[in-house]
Amino acid sequence: MTEDKERRGAFYGRRIGKSLRGAQQDAMVRLLPRYRLSLDEGATPTALFPHTPEGLWLEIGFGGGEHLLSHAARRPGFGFIGVEPFINGMARMLVDLEKAGLANIRLFDMDAALLLDRLPDGCLEGADLFYPDPWPKRRHWKRRFVRADNLDRLARVIRRGGTFRVASDVPHYVGWTLAEVRAHGAFRWTAETADDWRTPYPHWPGTRYEAWAMDCGRTPTYLTFKRT
Image 1 (tube, rainbow, N blue to C red):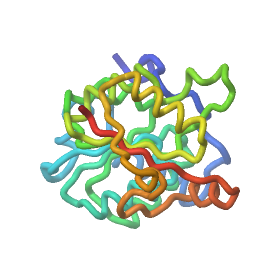
Image 2: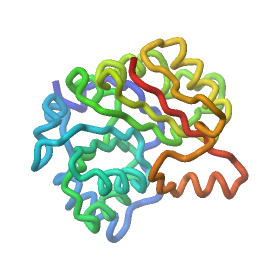
Image 3: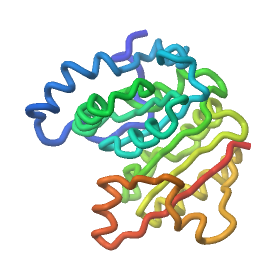
Image 4: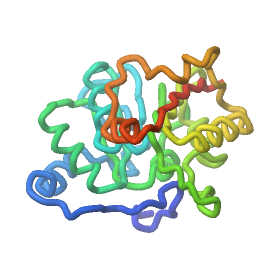
């Protein structure tokens, strides 16, 4: 089955914003074929890297790639897969990835659910979902990434004891996430005190979106869950 015939799963947003120009346009043409993984390659993710990785980590919706690049540079022994269907974010990431010269990142530019369905059972040490679209209108809540079917997907591919992290600046989405994860039952929220969700993750580099949200007066929340 070809990728263009695959059903939609989790992604409902727009694919492109401003028209790409210059280095970003060049990056999509020249670099995306080099770093992009196909759905077929998703079945054997450890073979995507020049070394056998100590572990695999997934970032869903990496935006401009600030955290993914920082995380991969800090853990060179790991293999990282970044998902971003938004073309402008992918283009920014490719430009910075070439400059960074990292060999432990591969990228996927389609719906994360499609990739999750191809990954092997228990292959991930962890997965990150930072500042997902909150879809604030009630009629759109079914489009939110954190929901039962996607939690099923994550529970299958994250090993027992592995990590699922969600950051958001939208209180209702935070509450939604906690309720959905609790109802699902495959993940345990690790927080013991308020500081556990108020304090950024270790080695957190921040993101462009987070900086903008804080400038607007919104407070981020950092949730960590363990696969049970």
